[in-house]
Amino acid sequence: MENPSNANNEPRPMSAPSGPPPPPTYGTYQHPTGPFQQPGTFPPQPKRTLSRTVIIAIAAGAAVVLAAATVGLVFLFTPAKDGGTAATTYFQALVDGDAKKALSVSDPGVPENEAVLLQDNVYKEAGQHIDGFRILESKGEYVRAEVTQNGRKQENILMMTKSPDGEWKVGAKNFQKIRLSSNRPVKTFTVNGVDVAAPESGSSLTGSQLLLPAFPGEYKLGISGDKYTTVEEKKALVSIDRRISDTSETLKVLPSQLLLDETKALLQKKRDACIASAPATTTQSFSSGCSGFNLYQSRPTRNVKWTIDQEPTFTLSLSKDVWYIQSEDKGKATVSYEVNRGNEATPKWEPHVEVREARVSGEIQIVDGKSTLKDN
Picture 1: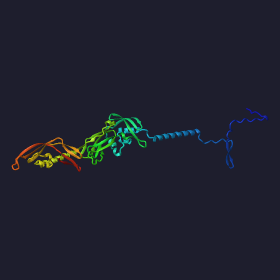
Picture 2 (picture 1 turned 90 degrees about the vertical axis):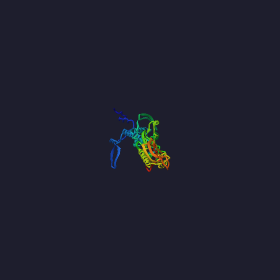
Picture 3 (picture 1 turned 180 degrees about the vertical axis):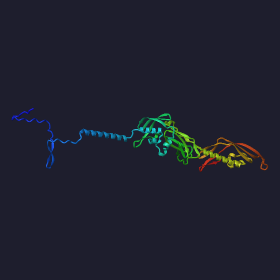
Picture 4 (picture 1 turned 30 degrees about the horizontal axis):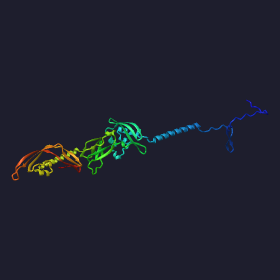
């Protein structure tokens, strides 16, 4: 296309394109004092910069990583909102018979020396552990669960507590306590064969007593540490249903077989001494301490001879620190003697035979660790 001509027949310049002029390009010119930039026709050098899209992508990725890390930290350091996890761990430990683990997620609310029944060496020997559970609801300080024990199913509510650092534990109100008591002071109780020191009795003669928390189960109670005493074995039951728990058995202290044997030997020794002495009068029989072999004769007697036809049996009854000998099955004894029916100047000796009950009586006291007999 040709440009139109002006009056001098010279071509007119073309109209400049609209918009701002393009930026100048620069080349390098070597000045005597050094290189500097001036307009020229050299092509521009490539810029060593990241594109805007790449920068945005990197920034977005970093934000995602940071957000994920923040969420992870919050997850790690935010305490649980309720005690459901601790309750689950607690119940499972009881099913497994693991007292140590159950204790790690619970707070019985007693000093360590009173948590003796919550130790593995006691709990592993207990019967009737819980054998199943199911968490029904976990809400704040309360966890509702269905628990089974020895075939019995019961819905229980665990009351949880939270430590200052936000750790949930099974609270002290959930623990039932077993009362260890005896009808006389003892040195040591036993629970499932494990010794549990009894409190100092001091001047008390009425008995000993302890109150200790325990996990659900059945426990065998006894005493130890005294060669002259024993008890009938009792069992305490800590049930998931508190209405049928039986945790307050009083142990009745009984004489040990050793004390019974020693008492029998002491009685025989005393009897033999009485027979050998053969008291001649009623007065003599009482004064010699042989009250069981007295003669009810006011006249003089001689040639007294006792024979035991049937051995008596006895029991020992404890009152305070004294064992009282009580006849159980009466034995039989025969005594023969001569009695003077005349007078001192002209005696008239007549033979006499009596069948008597062979009774035993007296007191057994423990002195310096040995049994001693005090005759009545």
